[in-house]
Length: 126
Image (cartoon, rainbow, N blue to C red; front, side):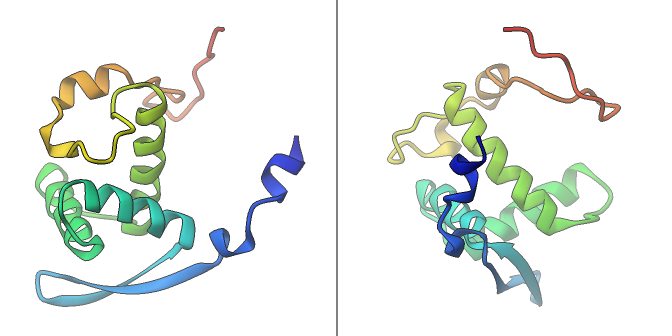
């Protein structure tokens, strides 16, 4: 099992800091290269740059919640959910289809939630 994971290109898990302007304030975000790559794919689907996507996600998160505790972790979760939603069929793998053109409720209906709201893992039954 471990060979599947340890054979990853070390460049994928090297972290990189990028500066993003959020409402005119320069903010540094440190993520592993794999996550920057996924964010790049997400952004390009809707004709955005990665900084534009980060700003949009930050703004929408602030509008939904009172604050942003750990934005880098939020971005990692966004990447994981994007990939999981592709596997579940909610987000087409065809990168020419913008995410903004998808019905969010239909996409979310395909999501398998491995964790409950308490953080305890759900039992996934095969």
